[in-house]
Image (cartoon, rainbow, N blue to C red; front, side, top):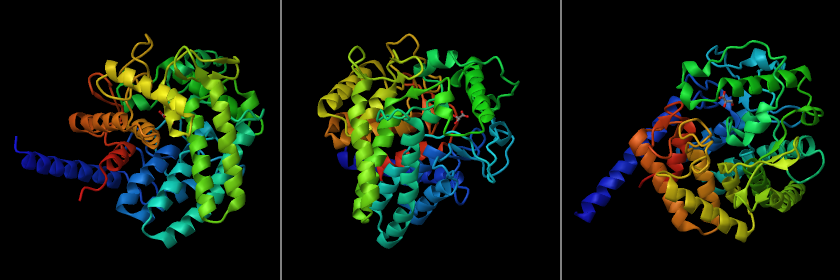
Length: 434
Ligand code: DGY
């Protein structure tokens, strides 16, 4: 084959894919925030917004800062940044503002989501071409992000272990992971009020969590609501307290990235507080290492034991500065997964009988996870695996479009379509073609 023609074609093709990704960002842009996808998720989601801002920066730097600012405009007084901001009324989503009952002027949920904001803000600053805009924006966000981190360690690590717990599976974003099977089944559901799911009107039921899992999710929401969303008591009062290695790795990375950013901006107190949080977190991560799984696993704080489940949360630890020998082991795990799956990185081990290739977080590939794992491995110098992850990600887009997630064997697109953060990650993998 004429290499000249093939490389020109592939350049044109990449340009087309990139163009399509930018169209999806525009389609889902609501002016000062972006929805994950029309229909299934019609509001602003916390970690979606932060990851989307990274792609947005390639198109419009100022718009990217707005995405983060809008999110932090809804930060609670105690420092918590909620997982959904219900900017507009929309009956198509359950559970809506009335179910949460958090009493906010612009309604929000009462739980949080992975702390990607620190990583995103530091990256926007580092890559900014408009440095004066970036300094102003980053300086203002820094204080708010630091308050969020402070909230995490105060309210979700009351015993000062160095690691925070989530009190609802939705906080991790990995709603129906195998990691929660035992703990979610143990959540009391006797007082559950009747409810009607809306997600199945927008997505295939076989791609979504089960009814029993929803009973657990909604029971937890009703329990926390009965405690008036008081974060001083929620952690200890929750029947679900899970220490997730991926969730903690993201928080640790954000602490360390905003420590660097704060140093650059001369905010030395913020820098040292966050450096200390990251150091304590990294030391404590070792308690989540499982020799039998050869990766990090979750720790169930209620049961007082590690969870017997090899999910992608353990691999996401690559996103933080974990020790080199752990990074090597995780790289090996990903190579093993590559031998059993057609597309990296499955959200659950295919060798586990609980794996399900199309059901949300029980097996499917998610491009945001691929991006964060690849980002971490790149810092560690694992270029060959990074290349495989990026190649598989773009192959999925070519074959199946910009879906929410994909079956790691067949590549089948699952969940919602024209998905914003999938598009943003594609823009990051490709970068603006010249
Ligand atoms: C949902 O509604 O499916 C979300 O994952 C909650 O954030």
